[in-house]
Amino acid sequence: MLQLFLSFFWIGSVSFGGGMATVPFLRALSEKTQWFSLEELSTIIALSECTPGPIGVNMATYVGFLTHGIWGAILASLALALPAFILVYFLANTLEKNRNNPMLKGVFAALTPASTALIAAVFCNMFLSIFHGNLELQLKSLLLFVILCAITLLPKTKHLPIPILLLFSAICGVLLKL
Amino acid sequence: MQPMLSLFFTMAKISLSCFGGGYAILPLLEREFIHKRNAITQHDLQNIIAVAQSTPGIISLNASTYIGTKLHGFVGALFASLGMLFPPICIVSLLSYLLSSYAFLPWVGNALAGLRICVTILIWQAVFRLFKSSVLNIPTFVLFSAVLLTAFLFHISPALLLFSSGLLGFLVSFIQKQRRQN
Image (cartoon, rainbow over all chains, first blue to last red; front, side):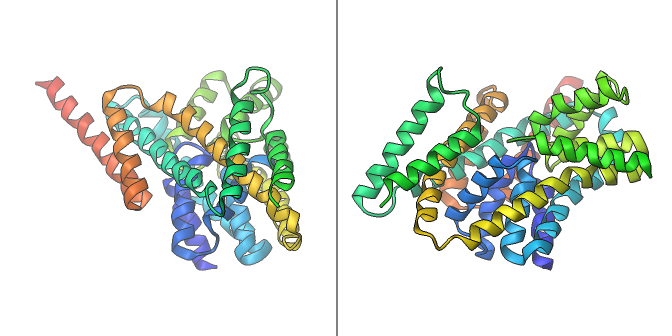
């Protein structure tokens, strides 16, 4: 339980810029603790996109629940929220005043592309992991991938809400695989 | 106690309406706290956004902590944040429980496989969005590529890469500042 708390406290401290920023750290966590695999991480992300509430919290809750039940869920979420809570509460005034400090701006100008790159790295891994199993499975996966790409790019369908898209993918998954 | 509970439930309600990402919460906060309650100003909201983006952690949580602090100090921050956390904890726990209970059904595995492909695309979309807003010139592009290659090829800890980048940003700004002063 302590490890759960510390892990999410850590993730809560280093994830800049929204829920997706936690993804690279969650991946590192999965490699370190073996609590879940990269594939399960995808499931976690999918669920977090469907449920209301901020994505990062959803992910923390899910992992917490997986490892230690409802108490794990509560502990992980609180751990995730705690660093930000402390920072915002104590530093809100300082941050407000120093908003336009060029040094601070410089740091964030570097942090945001780095954070994006980290998420992109996870994307690359996930993309490659689609292609596993026999040739037939790989082709079917690729087909669904292409269909989904098309849906998200074509003007008529690209504004479909995310839960609908996920539902569609889940149904296709059932229809195509096996 | 009454205003605290009201804050808790308001945040819980907003949390419930916040699908897919922290930025979606901002118009909701605007409607509730600026127009309905008249508790904060537009300027405050801009500050909140800036602060929430600068602090690590989730934007919506940071924003709720900030609003809570502004309205009712420490206790307000506590109730606001807990309110925001409460719905996802309940819902996701329930879903996770259901998922693990029914994981033995074969079609569940197939559905999840389909979901995974969709998630890959969602992550791509997030990367694309973030890329457009953060990689604005050659240096940032170089940094982006460097971090991407290192993370993908060498499995270096993301925290290390992030800290190095922050340090780099700091050093560059520092040098620029020195140059300007001379």
